[in-house]
Length: 285
Ligand code: KIV
Image: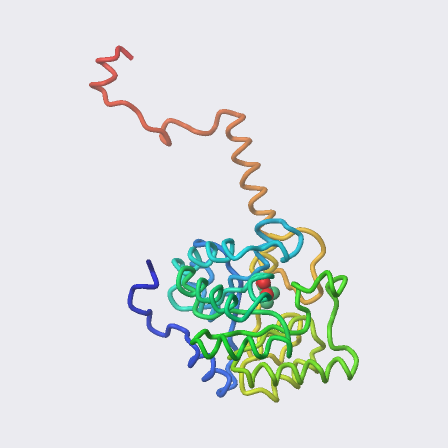
């Protein structure tokens, strides 16, 4: 397996993330869920790859992240790890895998690291997860926290809305971020929070903030690969900037191939295998 080979020069681990924060250097994070996209993302120079539970939306079509299982993330993580040489691989802990007890959460996080090859895990929640973060970190499990819009709380929140708009909510987010830093998280995702709140958190923390829909101040920016590439369906949130239209490129390619098949233009003899002259003679062809 790729992760048993020596590290590529410049392989990103925690010290590189910390050093970037100290130097004020921006880092890049993208999601990936399989070997080819991980290779493309890694070879493009992205610093961190998140095997996100957004796999539930963009790969499995569940409509939200609630049904995503540990096996689905583990399997995706194994493939991503094989395709990644330099970027840090972070695996999301799916809904239900860190909610029952600390021991079970540790077991599930260890599974993502030992079998999935994850180099860190991510989990959602604020102060309510601080003790769990402390426990995971004490077991040598690097943790990324995630506050603001936490999609695993979609039923409780009743939808996907900007979080931290009032001063009370904003202050609570800032406190949550500090508690999670204090508990040992090495980075914290800020999803869909006002840019001023994200800027304040980024300024006040020594750990890196990873922004998605949280303005330009965050230390690291993350997007869902399929949103960036134009591979998702339906209306996109305001912060998504689509850099390609792979859906259209794929549709065009499939339509051209289908048309070649229907017209007899595919396959042609130069693209298929034939018998040797000798065999043809023996068979009387
Ligand atoms: O699952 C995911 O892709 C995420 C990012 C949106 C941060 O959690």
